[in-house]
Length: 348
Ligand code: 13P
Ligand code: SF4
Image 1 (tube, rainbow, N blue to C red):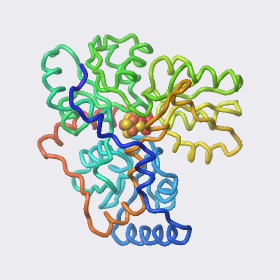
Image 2 (image 1 turned 120 degrees about the horizontal axis):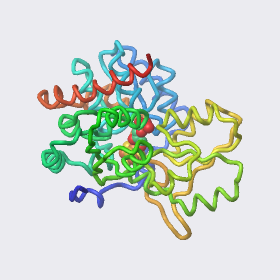
Image 3 (image 1 turned 180 degrees about the horizontal axis):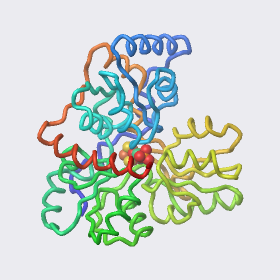
């Protein structure tokens, strides 16, 4: 089932978001960064940033004792942190997840409009009745969903752990209702052979990577390894040497015995990949075939809404606080905490 909500038309192009940002010279940027550092320290606040945000923000999170990571680690870090205030530089569901796990903390986001096509493509009012129609299925949702959708789920998973959770459920003979990402669902189904009913939403950024153009690029770089985030179409996933979460793809660049990598995910991840392996060559996977144009162009426009000025504004004014209805939060906590407990059991 696919949501019928008409949000697609209002998604901004990444270039439009970037053009709206003030162009700061080095000195102005330095001043802004210093102001943010002072405020973070004064307010016992910490910055948690996703790998897809501007490298300036990733560097700032690193320098101030925050965290730069995938969505699983962002959730873990926020919960474990002793900070009273968490600034989440990412998209809406990441802020909500932080609130679900840490209701006593103040969660702020540089821009509350920063959304995700997977979240928008799976509205609770459509999803809940769909689940009710399939009571014999275990409901497993990707973390890229609203708190209300998580509250209806038995399990929340991230791309880094989804396959393991589904294998675990399959071993118990469970049938799975999977939402919202159809590509990730198809990939997990192909790996695990589990009985999965798939919701039909997708990521508008990863949807732009195209298999035929990737094939042509690979021919030009025959020794390159192909790294693919599983939100990409299955035709692209099938060409990958490594399929994985953002952290798993960074680890692949660092650990694989190859010099060149073609990367099919948001290109802001190159900052951490290059930091982990400065001598390796990274090439962006193509976002279209011959004559095609792109809207996201390998960078999520919602992730691009996070800026230095936005962070300073929320620290100065306390605006953009994330709230989750308490009854919803308590239910969403169960399915989200199940993910963290399962991840911890794997580490043992
Ligand atoms: P990760 O959990 O791999 O960081 O993915 C989050 C996301 O939104 C990717 O598009
Ligand atoms: Fe959502 Fe795709 Fe952006 Fe990730 S890259 S936040 S899945 S729209």
